[in-house]
Image 1 (tube, helix red, strand yellow):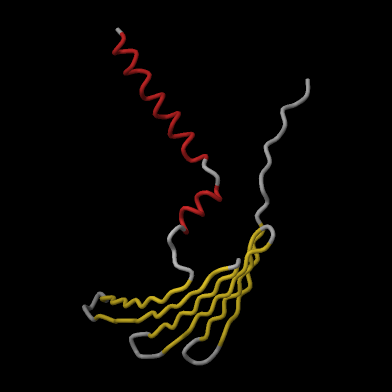
Image 2: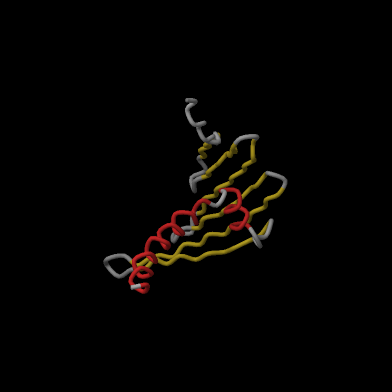
Length: 132
């Protein structure tokens, strides 16, 4: 009899634990995500894609980044299969309640585009129970 009660109770316990686990603070999750990440670096990536006709195209992505003091930047040079290059430059900074970043792209023909993004995070405060 006791074993059958335990068998019925165990799934409820697992569900309760699963519901509590994601309640970790978002700041704690971000801290764990960035733990051990270098403040600056460089990486090269080569991508080869094969088309339906069997021909392959290779492109190269060369990226450097820096971060610290609430600011970050990233520069990437994209070299396509035809040898033409484009660049992406991103600068960002934390604000009091979010962040702002500017992305500038330069295409192989020399034309540029710039995009400015500002994100504001509004903390959610729990509502007080109604007074009786």
